[in-house]
Image (cartoon, rainbow, N blue to C red):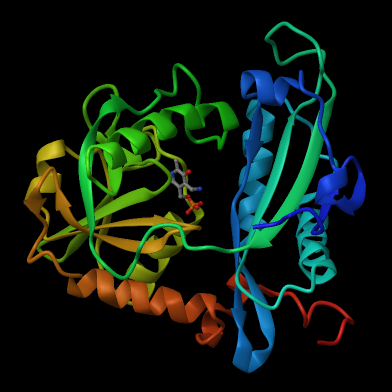
Length: 314
Ligand code: PMP
């Protein structure tokens, strides 16, 4: 994908991607001292509208992550929502998009630390390309890598450097013939996928690790819990989950902004259910797809319509 001409926000203003350079010694790059978000926009041709999903929730999480890393954001959550809309408009996106806001320690010297560094902020919005295959079931393994513990670096913050843990697990899984990994926390409980939260069902109840299990507090995770409770009337239990419960589950699925909902066909070569998408996963997945494309009016509050928010006509 040639990104050189797209319009990004960096160094306090809009510029071409190609012109938004950062220094080689930037701390965020050298030491992973940054945090970021991933936001999805769904283009709905019939409405000629690009719906950004739960944008404010993402900026609230960015505020939490940046507070943990003592990075000052240059604008309020509401201003950042507006900026995100503006970037999509400047690029005239009429297709699915993925928005990547991030902030980082911008000192250009040697010496790891958080204090005494200027902070920087940028947003890049790119056309969305496929992340995990949600059409077919995923074959998943339990990773030999453990999820970073909160006593080491807090996984509830979406910290750049923490993604080395995800990258090790993901590549190990793929190179061993799986699609994705599930990481256990250091005490052996189920944490999450490399970039997704994990849910399972058993006897009609939905389970997911609670936020103290070294997981990212996923925006999609919360959305799915809300619709499972409110629309499906399901019992949803957030608690620590054993590895064995993955093998005993009726259904397992991942949630994430990039992924949406992806069902798991097997874990460690043990088939989940009959290996096809289960009824609860299917219902949640269909409803979520309708919500993010503006087809469920009662969830309109989750969406920021890009074109309707502006004076620009398409
Ligand atoms: N866990 C991790 C480690 C992730 O990177 C992501 C993707 N942001 C998720 C869970 C899912 O979070 P969300 O639904 O907010 O995208």
